[in-house]
Every structure is written in structure tokens, then in C-alpha cells.
Image 1 (cartoon, rainbow, N blue to C red):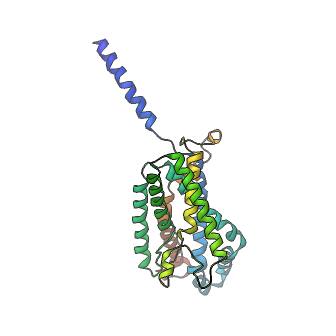
Image 2: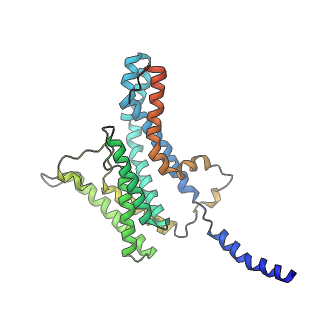
Image 3: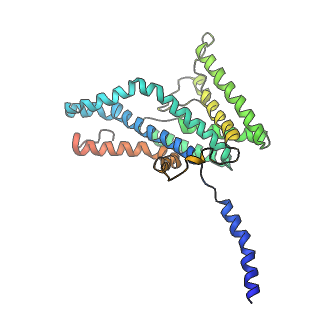
Length: 283
């Protein structure tokens, strides 16, 4: 009886071991950088909402709020935002590309992101501020393009990384050259085919070119630097100092979808209760 129990316990050990090996730790520095980008995005949209939606009404209600409006406007038009705004989004796109290389199913990721993007278009259209091709639309198509590249390369990681590196650099360079030196009577925005079909309007617009190039460069970095799907800075992964910020990076998609409705909702309630009694402003 004792031998039989020992035999069963021995047989269970490999299963327990394999289960523990399947547990995949997230790469902390990617979540940390993404978290910083998410927090700055929330701040940016908070200032935008005050400058573009609430500020004027608050000043009309009470001139004391003029300082808040001026702060928001100065931030929106300031050099600090002009410098860091494109850098933050480039980091987002690079991180998306790295995640493509780490993901097991980019087809599923891309389709899910596309449905969410269409949902954002439907909701924003109700408020006469339709986002027809925003950042999530662009990232969804970029993920699907990466999936196609991976299949054409027969899922050869090294080949995928080389193709993404070359394609990403070509896209960025060609787009920059074309934009700075466009042919006569041509559209200077090479970003999205809808521009060639007449007037195109989107409340939040992120063209495929050159942004697809940054995603592909990120995918290349993911292949060369994170080929083993492990942190390259394990020495700094101590004491959990990064977790408060990494939390936001881990939940980046959820935060992206919900942060604007939450910010606008909170500012509307504050306005209704304290600044413009009886008027939500936005609604």
C-alpha cells in the first residue's frame, strides 16, 4: 500500500513541475514603461478636456477659474507637450510591436482590438466627435499586418525580426521624405487612403504611415532583445518598487478605453455641483 502511494506521488511530480513552468511572468520593464505612458496620457487628456470643453464655461461662471484654464491652455500649446507628446506615442507603438513578438495569437489580438476600435467609433459618433481612425484602429491593423508578415515568414523568429526591421525603417524614411518633399498637387498626408477619397475627418487621428513603421521596429526589437521572453533588467526587479506604475501598464487597454469617459464624467459632476450648478457642460 505504501509503495503504491509513493508511486502515485512520483507520477504526479512531473505534472506539477510542468504546470509551474507554464506560469509566465510578465516582463516588468515593459509594463513599467507602458505605465508611465498611460499616466502621461491621462494627464494629457485631463488638460485637453479643461482647455477645450470645460474651461470657457467655468470662467464665464466665475472668473476665478481663469487660472485653471490658462494652465490647461499653456500646457496644450507649450513646448513640453510638443516635445514629449510624439515621443510618448512612439513608445506606445514600439511597445505594441514588442508585444506582437511575445504574443501567442496576434490574429486574435488584432481582431479583438479592431472590434473595440469600431465600438469607440460607434460611441463617439453619438456625441458628434467621431473617432473614425484613432490610435486603437491603427494598432489593430498594425497587429494584423504583423500577423501576415509572421505567416509569410513561416513563423521564423529571426526572419520576422529582419523583415520588420527593414520594413519599419523603409516606411518611416519614405514617409518622412514624401511629407517634406511632396510632388506637385499631391496630398502631403500619406497616412491613410481615406484622405484620397475626399474630405476626411476624425476627432482622434493616427495614420498608418509612418506609425506602422514604429510598430514593426518594436516587433524587431522584441525579436532581437526579448527572444527568450525574459526581462533584460532582472537585476532591477527587486522589492516591487515598480508595481504601482506597472499596474497601469498591465491594464493599458482597459485604461485607454475607459479613461476619457471617466475624466469627462468626473469633470461634469464637479461642474454640475460646484462650478456651474445645474449644468453638466458636456452633456
